[in-house]
Structure formats: C-alpha cells, structure tokens
Length: 228
Image (cartoon, rainbow, N blue to C red; front, side):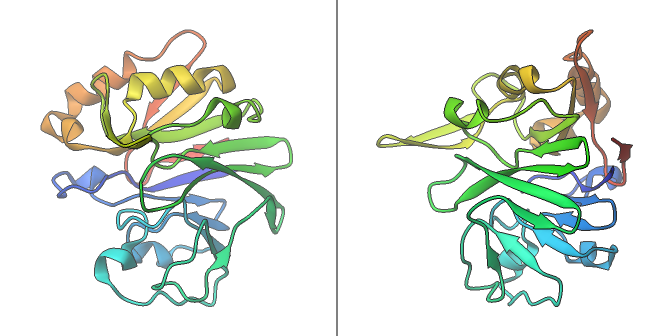
C-alpha cells in the first residue's frame, strides 16, 4: 500500500508552496480520502471518502456548488451539495480495501468519522479533525502500520470549545500523540494551522522532537509519498 499526501493545509490562508493545498490523501491510486481541492479529482481514483463536510475537506462546501461524480463517494451524513453521496453506517468494502468508520467528535453541527483502511495485512488509520476520540472508540482500534492525524494546534489545550455538555474543535498535537501512540509506531502529521506557517523550519523541528525510539513522527508536505 502506498499513500500520497495531496494537501496539508487547514482552513487558513495559503502562504507556503509546499503546504498550500487543503486536506486530501490518495491511497494506491484507488481511494481519495477527503477532497479539499477540486484538482484532486484529476488524480487516478475509484472511490472518494469524506471524513466530514467542512470546506477544507470538501471543497464544494466552500464553493457552494453541487458535487456530482460518476465515482462512488461516501460520507458520514447526508449533505445537500452531494446528492449522490453513499451514506456510511458500518464497515464497507472498496475493491480489495476494507474501511471501518470510527465516530469522532469534532464539530457541533457536522458529523465526523475517522477511518481504518485495510488491505491484506496493511492497516492505516485516518483520524480526520478531532476534538475527542472516545476511549470506547479507541479500545476497538487494532495496532496499525500508520496513523494519519492533524496538527492544527501545537500548544497544550489546542482549541477545545464547550457548549453545554458538548465539546468541539481541535485537540493539540501532544495530546493526540499520547492518545494514539499505543496503536502504532508511525504517525504522520498534517492539516497544519497558523502556528506552522509562522516559521516552517522551526515548526518541522518541533514536530521532529516529538519522535521517540519507539515512535516515528513524519511531518507531511504536499506531494509526499509513503510506502506502507
């Protein structure tokens, strides 16, 4: 299995050539996971899967245009701009790939799924954007070859908002690493927020320092290809 990072930018203004595209990943020229830019559709693919319908993960939400594609496309909830969307409710197959959805908390008004993508004995877990991954969810996650997660906020506390008993927003990178480390020896960080663009070399150095003897940390950039 190989993974191509198509985009690494969160919902902020573009300011660096190697990190200009919004979120998207391509698995084996078969599956597009998130569609932060319409240009991603030019990549060879056989299915499209959305983690959630925020505009940096689904470009047509920002453009307010109807998304139609002959390619089967899947998501966690209905969206009026994607009338042909196939709803995900359980484990499903795309060719030789098994995709397992994991509910995560990110937004008050938008449903979000993380996904475990398996082919043969290879396993990759994509968290999408995350305010919280419940313990009950994580206990069902097997050991995986790679976890792909967000790096919107680096400082402790991230951007966690509260409304009544609900929380929403983005968990900070150190907390995400702590939650996810028991399940892998390799984590790829993407979906960078403003902190990253203020001084990119220092930001990459800061992410590299998170690496330990038993955990490899990979700061992503647009176009990065990883063999799994």
